[in-house]
Structures are given as structure tokens and as C-alpha cells.
Amino acid sequence: MRHTYMKRHQDFHESARSNLGGLLDVQPTETGLYTLGQLRADLSENDVVARAQQRRITVAPIQRICLEAVETHGLVLGSNGVKPAELITGVETLAEEAEARMTLV
Image 1 (tube, one colour):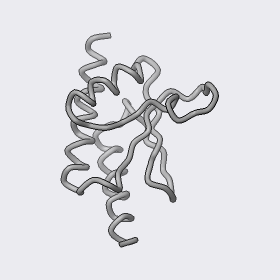
Image 2: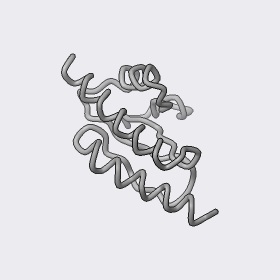
Image 3: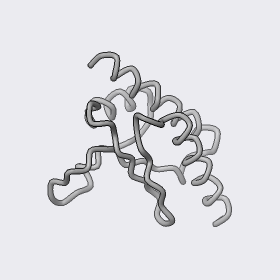
Image 4: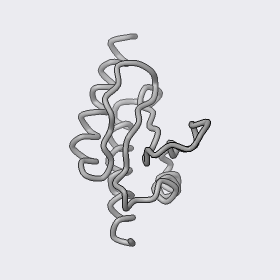
């Protein structure tokens, strides 16, 4: 099971680097079920989250998990509870929504 989650995590990061580069900087992590990604400064966390949810992608703004305000501007992403094919599709969809948001700004 550990190998399955590790592979899923690696696939997620690979897909994020190739699809979200310049939009969302996904931070590498060795533990946990969630990963943080820093959004470009001109993208709104709440707008990207809302657009992702319309496409059935679950992400959350970093502010939602913080007890106090933080300077970090980004999203909380999960990868381990999702099938590999759905994970790649989700990252691609998130990239489409972030890019679409950029064209509206």
C-alpha cells in the first residue's frame, strides 16, 4: 500500500510540474495526504477554488486550514484518495481553470 501511495504522489507531482508550471508552484512533500501549491500573485485563491469546484475538483485555499492569517497565497491539494487516471485529469482541469481565470483578469 505504501508503494501505491508513493507512486500516486510522484505521478501527481510530475503532472503538476508539467501542467501547472507558472500558475501553481506545487511544493514537494515527503509526508501526509495533502500538498501545498503557491498560486501566482495575480490569481485569486477563491476564484480558482470556485472554478475548480464547478468542474468537480476539490481544492481549498490555504487560508482555510490556517489558524491565523498567513502571507502564503495558494491551494491545498490532495492526491492519495484519487485514482491515478482521475488525478492526472484533475491536474489538467485545474490548469485549464487557472489559465481561464488569467484571461479574465
